[in-house]
Amino acid sequence: MRTSPSSPHTGPNRRSLLGLSLAAGATLAVGASPAVARSRPPASRHDARLQTVATFQGAMPTGVTVSRTGRVFVSFPRWGDDVSFSVAEIRGGKAVAYPNPEVNRPDINRPSHHFLGVQSVVVDAAERLWVVDTGRIEWADALGGGPKLVAVDLATDKVVRTIVLPPSVAGPRSFVNDVRFDLTRGYAYLTDATPDGPNGLIVVHLATGTSWRCLDDAPAVRPVAGFVPTVEGRPMLNHPDAASPATPLNIGADGIALSPGGEWLYFCPLSSRRLYAVRTVDLIRPGSGAMTSSVPVHDLGVKGMSDGLETDEAGRVYGGDLEDNAIVRRGTDGSFHTLVRDDRLVWADTLSVGYDRHLYVIANQLNRQAAYNGGVDLRVKPYGLYRFPVGSGPARR
Image (cartoon, rainbow, N blue to C red; front, side, top):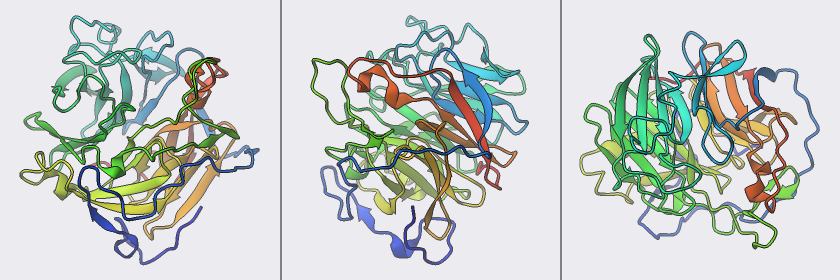
């Protein structure tokens, strides 16, 4: 996959972008993603560069992150599988509850002190593991104190910080999905991917724990209306049982990534094939919390349908191409290229660049869940964690 290249640039290409001041309910003036399923030949490739890091015979994983010393952490959301722990470290090829079994116990009476439904995990530049907890168990409403960011010091394996997202920022039907950190400026950025709306970006001021929403339900963060992807050669739709009609997924802002210098924040709705970017200065300027829908958005073009996003220290952006069992990369010239295509990459979920200059990816067969197949679970264990070389380290700051 490729777009027209232009001058080298580590951030969004200014000649190929259209900056949009998006008001709530406004229409994007750029080309929207095609909503209908597209025809794809079945993937039939095994790439020798794609190495298995770990396999999972139990619950379905979603998140992955790697520390400077090579420690690997994964997360398991509570979506209906038997989840013994929601955060784990891979030790000797096996997932072990992290930082301890007690904090992983989903105690609904103390929602701010326990992991309820962890969607993703991210190691920051200070070697802390941050846990993104949706606060939701099997799609029930989030409890007050449930949606939160939790920091674990990797030197001591102890929880050192909890930032609760208030209901005004992450309400009962919110689904905080992924996060990126800029410790230099002192902010964290999250996506709210909820299928129930509103979608948006969430900004957290790390020193105070204050948080606010931006681009609340603006067109760029919302799913493309009527979007029907083709995954493993089949249209993917919400179809929880044989008696229910099949409907589009309608999942909004999901993947998120930060440029190496922290100037640009990239994001994408899941129900879309486009990549977007905003200047972080527009998210953190005084009063931005009240100006929820007036942030200029830049359309970076079609990258394929992606779940997670990632950047490397060279300024390149990575995403899955879920319709092609592939990983794509956007170069600093604005062009997109397929890096690897492999049968094992069934639903490339979270991506993480390690200091070993490899991209780590969880492939969890999410599209085979019963909710999308008339109530029939088509997942085939094990799920996989893979890596392949990309020649660059992570963009952490």
